[in-house]
Length: 69
Image (cartoon, rainbow, N blue to C red; front, side, top):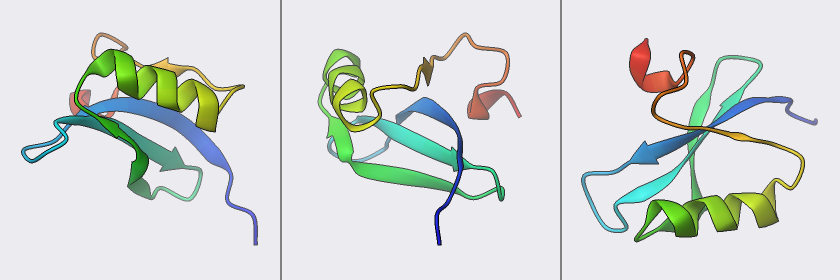
């Protein structure tokens, strides 16, 4: 079964590494992508570009960022 990705969100974690990526799926699930977790936002964005080359990451100021719900 293929799961459709709805959006990618930059995220902050209370543990190490402090930054990561939340993958939001069309079915409503929001999962932490461990492969994109890193020590800086720039490193997360670089990993996301490799892992999800056709997707943009929603940053903190995006009106639909998961933290604004």
